[in-house]
Length: 503
Image (cartoon, rainbow, N blue to C red; front, side, top):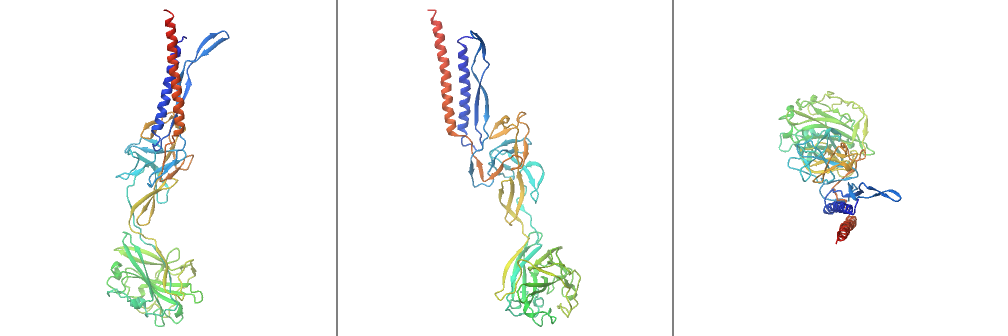
């Protein structure tokens, strides 16, 4: 081994320090690249040459070589954004993306996603993020798939339950002998303002998502009331009817009759001391029967929860059962369909005794206090067609859609992947990595489970490049390169001296 071997040692030093500077330059160039992970070079010595010395065999090094370029996967800082589809991973893992129409998977920490014109959830390069489709309960369906919105609407839901909690003024007097008798669907106004004491309206929906107004009319009974049998407390009993616009009533037996639009009728009795609703009666008519025949008005059936049920028909041929909650429920639902009350046309009394039932007031119930009649609370469970307004993603990666009809529907769960050997992943550009034999297959799963990080919505992970550290490495690398260049120039001077010995 001669002097010239030091030239090659110097050259190896220049080469490795040049590579190190390239890595530093790449880090600094990507200081503002979303999801970028910085790299670090490591050197190693090369095989030494053995030489004989007075003390025995010794070794002389032959320079340096690039040992490895490690990717530093430390967490980058989060940048908050106003875009709900900007996602960051807090912890271990990668987003899974694929070229459109391909099953080839790539992995990234850059969560700049958006929905394209075809509904695919894509990154800026058009790669589709992958996850699991969710059912209505938020449960995964099938295997990992492309995230795509195939429908931007929420289907309508027909109303099944109405809750109407009111306070009826205890000082009111009766306005008519019969609310049901005062209703005349053939008139321009089915019922006059002076025929009832109070009314409350609520909007309901049919199976097609069309809205309809259902109104509940209340009036105190009097001694001439069709319901009065000589035992009812006139001061604490009200009559009610539940009605819709006659033009919207498609029940075949009601068409063209004065009763068209009346869905239910009955009484509400209040406790004389507490003013709370004590019991109710409810009567309905078969949709196909003639409502002018008293025998066709029978006691309503009850929902499993203990509330009276009426049948509407807003869409021709489609019966729609709706339960009504006034703030009290039957605990034995003793009344059954077909339990008719024999009476004159338009009457439901005649001294008949109603079937008994046990009653359970609810936490929020209708009342009769000496204050103005008012609607305390009302709600219904139907809704019309909704249009997607925005998307949100939670920390578990669950993506939900918020629709104009107030519905929030599960859509997808964003998938994440991890590897047994992250360092063996192959960088393919575009902030993407590809799996290799050395990295092992991707281990996919839900965010927050099995060692995978959680999702930070409205956030992007910044580059984890530390500028200060890179500048320090730049200085030491520059000095190392400079020193190795001196090896070459100094060795050249030594060789020149050898050549000059001949002169």
